[in-house]
Image 1 (tube, helix red, strand yellow):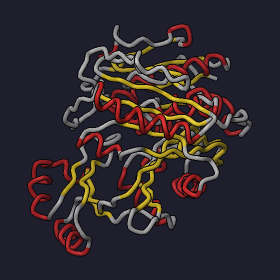
Image 2 (cartoon, rainbow, N blue to C red):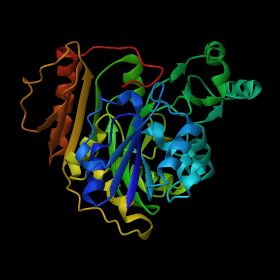
Image 3 (cartoon, rainbow, N blue to C red):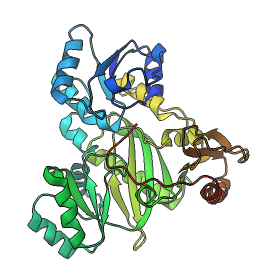
Length: 399
């Protein structure tokens, strides 16, 4: 089998390595701006091709032509998007080359925040009230009938990029005026105060074969826009929240039509009534080192398992390994120091330290969920004192 991987940003090294270990031919198409900068695992890649890009964006028509040209002399069996921004391109290429996997209609449910909300609501899944930024009269009625605040969200960005909280109607019109011709690429949603959770799962031939629930400390949007320490931890597996979240994730995967691969899905548990609302999902590994969080707790590396799922393919022969049942947590902060020193943190539960300029981060692992909660509370306070720095949120992705 030959797998063509798309990566406009550098990520997915373990997918590439595992695909090669599985005996696959591995082709990588990546951004020209990364040439000479990205440290790809060259021993696991048969050929690398570069697409001209502006801010890592590739011209769709040119990419279809380029990959079709490659297909003249290389038999491509699978196309995999390693980054969120490549998901739609991979679907377009599958459609054009008639290859297995999700096509453009289904992929929109995992990339377009409006499409995923509409499909979820059709499937009976609870979502916060929302409206597309299209017709102004519809927007006015939405704001009249839906209590403020609201959230203005780009339909196809990742994470908290480009999201703006709107406190009253007078704030919306200048905000959407600034969007110009890009207004239709946004939606307006009711802001639901509550706790944010994520479920990371593996899907093989439309069956969820592994899923684990985690909870953020503070909502990622709040950290991105207002500052603070980013934390997330694996939930107690038999807790009411974990069981409800895993069940909701199953409904989301079925309702939205995930075929194969991995997914990172976010939910909010409303403070007002305890109801769980679907926020967004994806057809890729979660960012912010969540793959490391899951591996520490379970022993499963989602990148590697994803490669195995693709190799197993339509025969559905994939079975995940037996997962460990430890607990883990991440604590990450922007740092005042260029190379923050975390050597003062010496607890035995620390299994990994983030090494990145102006970032401090630790990964914790323990058989005890209570010990993880205790350390996380202490480290969040210490990180604030030792490292914390704030940077305004970005409007578009960067390296």
